[in-house]
Image (cartoon, rainbow, N blue to C red; front, side, top):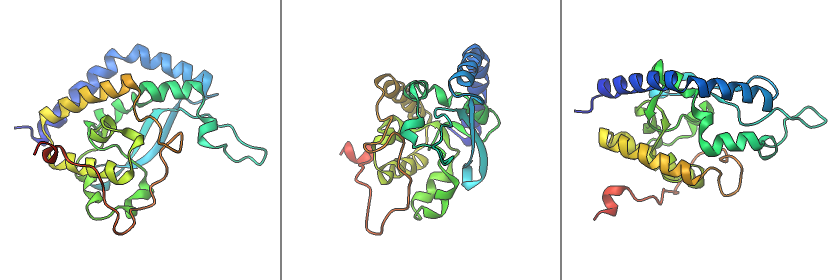
Length: 216
């Protein structure tokens, strides 16, 4: 049985192994980030985790701090420089999250941790995406990432929380590798980054069809 304890044990073991094995790469990316981002290579931000509990997520920065004449940050698509695009396309910007997994804030597989300000914007069904620990990657990341609507993405997240299994986690890892190699869904259709989620209008539903229904 794939219990929460077993899943957590696997997450702890694999994240620790990943940190040890990838430590040379992490060091190189830290140095390159310092050079290309003009300083601190890390990006930290509060994100909601299991049951909505807030933790501090850490990633490699993909956007620099360029500002206009008034001191305001330039748009994301401008600050997302070539090095940042490389990190996102290869998903290397996510590697520091191995430390979040190690301490138990995150899991290897689960819904991606989004912004704290989204919490009151979820409807009752969407809130269930926080029934499990957020993940380094998840079903939505392996099946569209930023190219699908928020409603479809949340439908995938909630479906995952209700169907967690070792086999599904393994399949998501395989699908994530394929998506990264193909560089699928890195950007949304209208932005370099995903547009802000403002809440799902009443009557709007996801058009995503869960795998069980597809097999019928």
